[in-house]
Length: 113
Length: 115
Image (cartoon, rainbow over all chains, first blue to last red; front, side):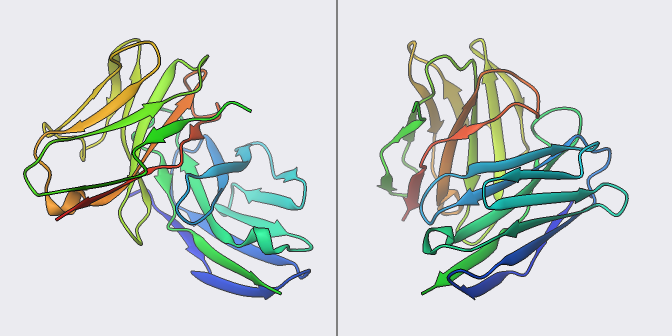
Protein backbone atom coordinates (compact mmCIF):
# COMPACT_ATOMS: atom_id res chain seq x y z
CA UNK A 1 0.00 0.00 0.00
CA UNK A 2 1.37 3.45 -0.92
CA UNK A 3 2.19 5.41 2.18
CA UNK A 4 3.83 8.68 3.13
CA UNK A 5 5.02 9.07 6.70
CA UNK A 6 6.20 12.39 8.07
CA UNK A 7 8.12 13.19 11.20
CA UNK A 8 8.04 14.79 13.59
CA UNK A 9 4.28 15.19 13.96
CA UNK A 10 4.84 18.64 15.45
CA UNK A 11 7.79 20.86 16.20
CA UNK A 12 8.39 24.08 18.12
CA UNK A 13 11.47 26.17 17.35
CA UNK A 14 12.67 29.64 18.22
CA UNK A 15 12.58 32.36 15.61
CA UNK A 16 15.83 32.49 13.67
CA UNK A 17 16.67 28.83 14.19
CA UNK A 18 16.88 26.17 11.49
CA UNK A 19 14.88 22.97 11.34
CA UNK A 20 14.57 19.84 9.22
CA UNK A 21 11.37 17.92 8.53
CA UNK A 22 11.38 14.33 7.33
CA UNK A 23 9.30 12.36 4.84
CA UNK A 24 9.54 8.61 4.17
CA UNK A 25 7.47 7.06 1.43
CA UNK A 26 6.69 3.66 0.02
CA UNK A 27 5.09 4.86 -3.23
CA UNK A 28 6.43 2.86 -6.15
CA UNK A 29 6.87 3.50 -8.99
CA UNK A 30 7.63 7.10 -8.26
CA UNK A 31 7.31 10.22 -10.40
CA UNK A 32 7.78 13.23 -8.21
CA UNK A 33 7.69 14.51 -4.65
CA UNK A 34 6.32 17.85 -3.52
CA UNK A 35 6.46 19.79 -0.31
CA UNK A 36 3.52 22.05 0.48
CA UNK A 37 3.01 24.65 3.16
CA UNK A 38 -0.50 24.84 4.58
CA UNK A 39 -1.45 27.72 6.84
CA UNK A 40 -4.27 26.98 9.27
CA UNK A 41 -7.62 27.14 7.49
CA UNK A 42 -6.03 27.67 4.08
CA UNK A 43 -5.22 25.58 1.03
CA UNK A 44 -1.78 24.03 0.50
CA UNK A 45 0.80 26.14 -1.32
CA UNK A 46 3.60 24.43 -3.23
CA UNK A 47 7.14 25.01 -2.01
CA UNK A 48 9.18 22.56 -4.10
CA UNK A 49 8.73 19.74 -6.56
CA UNK A 50 11.40 17.16 -7.35
CA UNK A 51 11.47 14.35 -9.87
CA UNK A 52 13.18 11.07 -9.09
CA UNK A 53 16.36 12.27 -10.82
CA UNK A 54 16.75 15.38 -8.66
CA UNK A 55 18.25 15.24 -5.21
CA UNK A 56 17.91 18.83 -4.06
CA UNK A 57 15.70 21.82 -4.79
CA UNK A 58 15.68 25.22 -3.12
CA UNK A 59 13.06 27.91 -2.82
CA UNK A 60 14.38 30.81 -0.79
CA UNK A 61 14.91 29.64 2.79
CA UNK A 62 13.40 26.24 1.99
CA UNK A 63 15.63 23.44 0.70
CA UNK A 64 14.25 20.00 -0.09
CA UNK A 65 16.38 16.91 -0.56
CA UNK A 66 15.44 13.57 -2.04
CA UNK A 67 17.08 10.16 -1.82
CA UNK A 68 15.14 7.95 -4.22
CA UNK A 69 17.16 4.88 -3.19
CA UNK A 70 16.13 5.07 0.46
CA UNK A 71 12.78 6.72 -0.37
CA UNK A 72 13.42 9.60 1.96
CA UNK A 73 13.03 13.34 1.60
CA UNK A 74 13.69 16.22 3.92
CA UNK A 75 12.69 19.87 4.01
CA UNK A 76 15.19 22.20 5.64
CA UNK A 77 14.09 25.65 6.74
CA UNK A 78 16.80 28.15 7.54
CA UNK A 79 16.55 31.28 9.66
CA UNK A 80 12.95 30.56 10.60
CA UNK A 81 10.42 33.36 10.77
CA UNK A 82 7.13 33.60 12.67
CA UNK A 83 5.30 33.32 9.34
CA UNK A 84 6.81 29.87 8.82
CA UNK A 85 4.37 28.57 11.44
CA UNK A 86 2.21 26.17 9.41
CA UNK A 87 1.73 22.54 8.48
CA UNK A 88 4.25 21.17 5.97
CA UNK A 89 2.94 18.36 3.81
CA UNK A 90 4.89 15.86 1.73
CA UNK A 91 3.04 14.56 -1.36
CA UNK A 92 4.29 11.72 -3.54
CA UNK A 93 3.08 10.93 -7.05
CA UNK A 94 3.49 7.79 -9.08
CA UNK A 95 3.77 8.18 -12.87
CA UNK A 96 0.11 7.75 -13.70
CA UNK A 97 -3.04 9.47 -12.59
CA UNK A 98 -4.06 11.74 -9.78
CA UNK A 99 -6.10 9.30 -7.76
CA UNK A 100 -2.90 7.81 -6.48
CA UNK A 101 -1.44 11.09 -5.21
CA UNK A 102 -0.42 10.18 -1.68
CA UNK A 103 -0.39 12.90 0.96
CA UNK A 104 1.39 12.74 4.26
CA UNK A 105 -0.37 13.94 7.38
CA UNK A 106 2.01 16.85 7.68
CA UNK A 107 4.36 18.26 10.29
CA UNK A 108 2.90 21.13 12.31
CA UNK A 109 5.65 23.72 12.82
CA UNK A 110 5.34 26.49 15.38
CA UNK A 111 7.97 29.23 15.34
CA UNK A 112 7.95 31.11 18.59
CA UNK A 113 9.43 34.56 19.24
CA UNK B 1 -1.44 37.15 -8.89
CA UNK B 2 -4.26 34.88 -10.11
CA UNK B 3 -5.73 32.61 -7.47
CA UNK B 4 -8.38 29.97 -7.01
CA UNK B 5 -11.36 31.21 -5.03
CA UNK B 6 -13.99 29.19 -3.20
CA UNK B 7 -17.39 30.00 -1.74
CA UNK B 8 -18.72 29.79 0.85
CA UNK B 9 -15.84 29.71 3.31
CA UNK B 10 -18.00 27.82 5.79
CA UNK B 11 -21.19 25.86 5.15
CA UNK B 12 -23.33 24.31 7.86
CA UNK B 13 -26.01 21.86 6.76
CA UNK B 14 -28.24 19.21 8.23
CA UNK B 15 -27.72 15.55 7.50
CA UNK B 16 -29.57 14.50 4.36
CA UNK B 17 -29.51 17.93 2.77
CA UNK B 18 -27.88 18.74 -0.54
CA UNK B 19 -24.94 21.13 -0.66
CA UNK B 20 -23.13 22.77 -3.53
CA UNK B 21 -19.60 24.01 -3.05
CA UNK B 22 -18.36 26.52 -5.56
CA UNK B 23 -14.95 27.23 -6.99
CA UNK B 24 -13.57 29.69 -9.51
CA UNK B 25 -10.34 28.22 -10.94
CA UNK B 26 -7.52 30.30 -12.39
CA UNK B 27 -8.81 31.61 -15.70
CA UNK B 28 -6.38 29.98 -18.15
CA UNK B 29 -6.35 26.62 -16.38
CA UNK B 30 -7.99 23.64 -18.02
CA UNK B 31 -7.83 20.96 -15.32
CA UNK B 32 -9.79 21.11 -12.11
CA UNK B 33 -9.77 19.04 -8.96
CA UNK B 34 -11.55 18.56 -5.67
CA UNK B 35 -9.85 17.32 -2.52
CA UNK B 36 -11.08 16.96 1.01
CA UNK B 37 -9.39 17.02 4.39
CA UNK B 38 -11.18 15.66 7.42
CA UNK B 39 -10.09 17.47 10.57
CA UNK B 40 -6.74 16.15 11.73
CA UNK B 41 -6.38 13.85 8.73
CA UNK B 42 -4.45 13.97 5.49
CA UNK B 43 -5.67 15.60 2.28
CA UNK B 44 -7.47 13.10 0.04
CA UNK B 45 -8.07 13.29 -3.70
CA UNK B 46 -11.73 13.20 -4.79
CA UNK B 47 -11.96 13.92 -8.51
CA UNK B 48 -10.29 15.53 -11.49
CA UNK B 49 -12.18 17.19 -14.35
CA UNK B 50 -11.22 18.21 -17.86
CA UNK B 51 -13.16 19.20 -20.96
CA UNK B 52 -16.48 18.89 -19.14
CA UNK B 53 -15.81 15.33 -18.10
CA UNK B 54 -14.49 13.55 -15.05
CA UNK B 55 -10.93 12.42 -15.80
CA UNK B 56 -10.40 10.40 -12.67
CA UNK B 57 -12.09 9.82 -9.35
CA UNK B 58 -11.23 8.12 -6.10
CA UNK B 59 -13.19 5.55 -4.13
CA UNK B 60 -14.48 8.35 -1.92
CA UNK B 61 -16.25 9.98 -4.88
CA UNK B 62 -19.35 7.80 -4.90
CA UNK B 63 -22.81 8.41 -6.36
CA UNK B 64 -23.57 11.02 -3.70
CA UNK B 65 -20.99 13.32 -5.30
CA UNK B 66 -21.11 15.11 -8.62
CA UNK B 67 -19.12 17.86 -10.29
CA UNK B 68 -20.09 20.36 -12.89
CA UNK B 69 -18.74 23.33 -14.78
CA UNK B 70 -22.01 25.19 -15.29
CA UNK B 71 -20.44 28.16 -17.06
CA UNK B 72 -17.04 29.36 -18.20
CA UNK B 73 -15.77 30.25 -14.77
CA UNK B 74 -17.37 28.16 -12.00
CA UNK B 75 -16.58 24.60 -11.00
CA UNK B 76 -18.93 23.03 -8.47
CA UNK B 77 -19.01 20.01 -6.19
CA UNK B 78 -22.45 18.76 -5.21
CA UNK B 79 -23.13 16.36 -2.37
CA UNK B 80 -26.65 15.04 -2.81
CA UNK B 81 -27.52 13.82 0.65
CA UNK B 82 -24.94 14.80 3.20
CA UNK B 83 -23.80 12.49 5.97
CA UNK B 84 -22.07 13.36 9.21
CA UNK B 85 -18.84 11.90 7.86
CA UNK B 86 -18.87 14.40 4.97
CA UNK B 87 -17.84 17.08 7.45
CA UNK B 88 -14.44 18.22 6.21
CA UNK B 89 -12.51 20.99 4.51
CA UNK B 90 -13.05 20.79 0.75
CA UNK B 91 -10.33 22.20 -1.47
CA UNK B 92 -10.63 23.03 -5.13
CA UNK B 93 -7.48 23.14 -7.25
CA UNK B 94 -6.65 23.90 -10.85
CA UNK B 95 -3.71 23.41 -13.19
CA UNK B 96 -2.92 24.51 -16.70
CA UNK B 97 -2.00 21.03 -17.87
CA UNK B 98 -2.30 17.41 -16.88
CA UNK B 99 0.52 15.45 -15.38
CA UNK B 100 1.77 15.29 -11.87
CA UNK B 101 4.73 17.57 -12.62
CA UNK B 102 2.40 20.48 -13.34
CA UNK B 103 1.62 22.76 -10.47
CA UNK B 104 -1.79 22.51 -8.88
CA UNK B 105 -3.00 25.72 -7.27
CA UNK B 106 -5.31 25.26 -4.32
CA UNK B 107 -8.14 27.46 -3.18
CA UNK B 108 -8.60 28.47 0.47
CA UNK B 109 -11.18 25.75 1.04
CA UNK B 110 -14.77 25.46 2.19
CA UNK B 111 -15.36 24.08 5.66
CA UNK B 112 -18.44 21.86 5.52
CA UNK B 113 -20.11 21.01 8.81
CA UNK B 114 -22.90 18.44 8.71
CA UNK B 115 -25.06 18.33 11.84
